[in-house]
Length: 208
Image 1 (tube, rainbow, N blue to C red):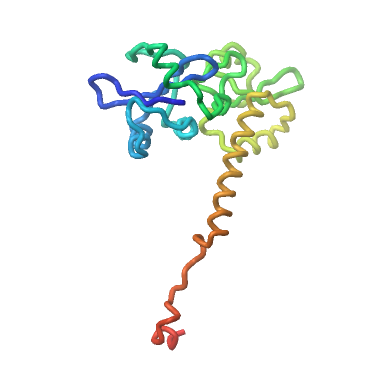
Image 2: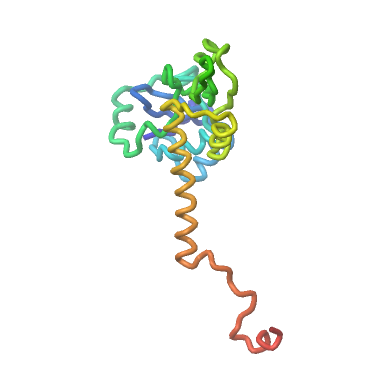
């Protein structure tokens, strides 16, 4: 599971997690740090990977690649095992570059191959190496379920890389979970609008 860490001598935090066998560092924006701290997450403690993904999707958690990163202390392997073992949430929920598995600067890309084209997720380096084959390129944190479906339909893209299929499945699950939560609220009656009048009040009854 992700672990929140605090820089020594600074009132700033970062997140370490394990993805595909690599220790990945996520920097936090001021808003991202505020959201984690206000949720009761404290330095040195693990938290749900889904929260980190939510921060990534909003742009409040970001990474330029894998590894500890500049200014970040090296991780003790024993501590890493303590923090990251038995993670109940799958690493696969995080998108990565289809070619090199990097997490940095990911874009949803329309790649052209002759008359064919396909949708794929690529990092900055892999996009640069095949720039002549790329038509559309959208930063992944900006890609919502609606934007992805619209792009596939508008561009008539039928070939979808497994990286995009996995991300589409994630977006579909998030969409469905929101509707399920809304249905649960309505079923419980909590979402029912209260009457503007107290019908037990005789004065109000006369006004109706």
